Length: 427
Image 1 (tube, rainbow, N blue to C red):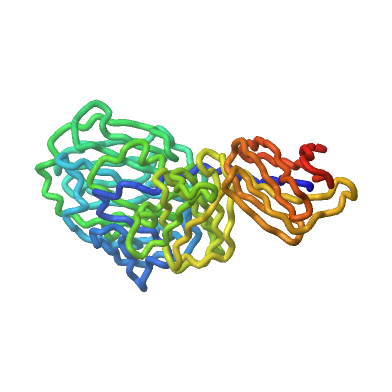
Image 2: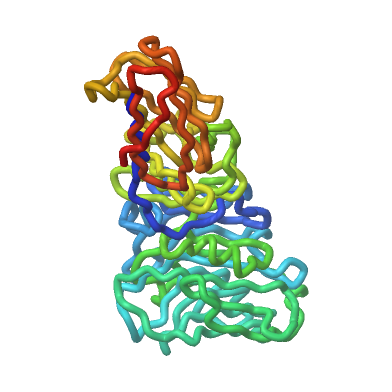
């Protein structure tokens, strides 16, 4: 008999990603700017706070980091109007964080808003907080107590490429500790500030806008695109900022929150039926690819989508990748994966002809009968005893093999037409 052991190699896609079990507590606004979350002139809040916004004169459906985005042209009263819910206040009892993917249509020279609660061009009495670009080309966040700025944090970075998205995030724990206010650009801490004063006493009476400057007549509206804008009444950690940046790929934590209507992707070892906790997946539709990583065994994705799914980096790249094309995410997927693939063929030593029907057992676990010359096994890396049986011979043929992770091995074993023939590896 002749055995061929073939492990099929797949191309490993090296993409950095993020953890799907993101803590969304404290988030009180999350605008994806996607077409799916845009209903007429309303942009829908993906957080549980229900802070939907009214879209005024913005372009929708433009290319974003994650799916679609909105775009403004620095025109008076272009904005997403949110209003003044108390869960968009930033005070010392909770701290706050805010962020967006930001694209500037002009590289330098003009102040413009990203998000504001109050007026970007007014006095401290006209402002709760503002997140914008300055005339000096720095991005900054200011928080006002009504008479002075408790936080006035400017980025060190002051050069931007027109047309390029930047991930900009502000975080603050609410304290006056040294450097407790932080600004991150593209996942890296860029600047810090030590707050002063008592913001807890501020009335927080102003309205919030995205893109807008909070006033009529002055024109500090945003000129360019914004995507995935959010506000949270807590300080996000540096690792959470990194997860949202996701190596430039972006990450919507509410698309992977594990709601009852979400699609669930899990991965199981086909050899021993154990669940694998660490893996990544790309979901590709007609316009974009979303990359997600999990360390808890489940990736969530919106349901009722037609996507190509590529599963990779499985348990530290110790398993073969798997792909599923035109998959409908209305049905959950439990994908079987393996470290080694074994294909068995038997030949007669005297004639070198295929034997046809036979049984093969690998590691005392897998049995395969075949009448078309091949038997296929999906295995872990490790050492195995192979036992082959054919009704044309009195004695079985055995062989010991060792397979490595992602190994491509071909072995030939012959059965001679005598009793107790020892298997010979002709490779």
